[in-house]
Amino acid sequence: MELKQLTSPSLISVGIECRSKEEVIRALTKQLFEAGKLYSEEEFLLAVLDREKLSATGIEGGLAIPHGKSKAVKEAAFAVATLKKPLSGWKSIDPNNEVQLVFLLAIPEVEGGSTHLKLLSELSTRLMNPSYKEQLLDSRDQLELYNNLDFKEEQSAARVQTKLDKVILAVTACPAGIAHTYMAAEALTKAGEELGVNIFVEKQGANGVEDKHSTEHLKKADAVIFANDVAIKDEARFAHLPKVKTSVAAPLKNAKEIIQKAIEASEHPKGEYNPSVSDGNLTDPDSTDKKSWKTEIKDSLLTGISYMIPVIIAGGMTLAAAVFISQAFGLQELYNTEGSWLWLLRQLGGGLLGQLMVPVLAAYMAYSIADKPALGPGFAAGLAANLIGSGFLGGMLGGLLAGYFLKWLKKKVQPKGTFAGFVSFWVYPVVGTLVVGSIMLFVVGKPLAWVNTSLTTWLDSLSGTTNALILGAIIGAMVSSDLGGPINKAAYAFCIAAMQMEILFLMQPLLL
Image 1 (cartoon, one colour):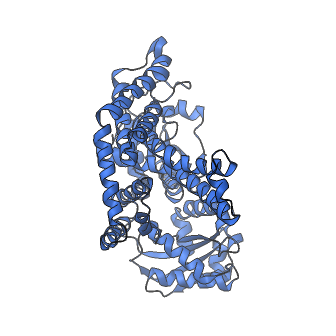
Image 2 (cartoon, rainbow, N blue to C red):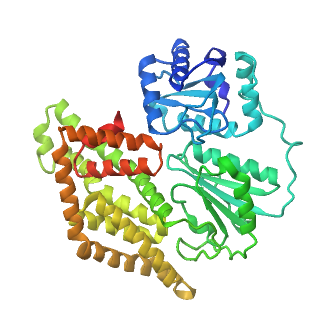
Image 3 (cartoon, helix red, strand yellow):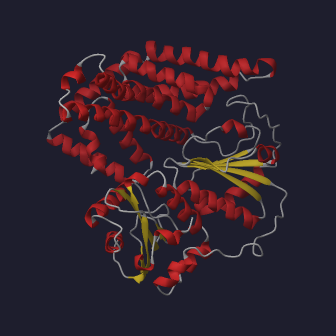
């Protein structure tokens, strides 16, 4: 992808003086508007500032990539600025990041899943190259920086020859599946080249699985690195390999150290690669860097929420479409007539929100802990939560119960020999469903339903009172306090739980 196609010298500023993040963003937004890339300067500015509230757009090494998707954008473009004085107040992945180089991306709303992802991943990958970034920062004027955007250094002579007879695989994955996924992959690749290690990185991002590891790589590999904050897809492929597990942001700071750990882990004997094995068919005795239970629960919740969000969006928009059609065309009677096409559309949206949302949450929380065998028991736990009226809280508890019970069951009943397939595809899901479902229905059902009802009643009583403002301020502070960390996720999960209880006013602090 050629970056120069999406910008121009008039959208580039070199050595500007700004005292704050907002001042930089306003200046670049003005350039985009004056260049004819925006319908409305203020509307796009608001979209960018709203995006800034969701999570950090500062990266590390002096870099920041703010961006906005909006109907106010005529065509995809970006503006660039180098700062005369580095800014230390820009919220970043690296708390010590002092921003010197800023890319402001302007993306039409309809291109949010295509151009946005391609541009962001391309920038993230290129800017992990220190020489490329330094060349941009050292540009003396607009034209020179513009020409340097697509500069490609000669790599054949400079690349380090492979010295170690090791093949290391890696998988990167983050909740959003955009910047961190690609930047972590690039950091590991470059560190591997410097250390003289054959390293191949698979990216599991918003575009799906990219650079998927081939059968040949899986056979030859000596170890695998998992740099992820959500569950790895098809993790059973790596069951025969020693593993190093870390967060997706860790390679941005110490990629060489992580690869060194993988080299050390590769000294352990690896198992024989079995292409027909499914998740849970093999144990993982050589795995290093086991997650603590706190991290495992946090990752489980993040995974459940990431899979649940598309269900919420699909259900909400389908229901909204049914309501809009009924009101716009005076079809309220048809909307309420059982069996009519509009009533069925209404039921579809409501079913996604009311019936499917909690089972999906529980299933993928369980999947994060115990892989594919836990999906059936996880869905069962979510359905049980709906049956007993425990809602979102019951779904979370059910997902954890299913995940940890299946994790224990896989250790106690290991698939071997002739009955390996029977154990994986019958024993695990059936026993797990019966045990977890029974616990949910007959042991924790009534207490959870009481807690859910009490919480609903209490939250309903807050609506429209001063207490609601206080609670909203607390939620807003939690959401913005650690920008995607555990406090932020706790507040977000609480608000989704309230939405599932049909208490909508709590979501407002997240939308402001």
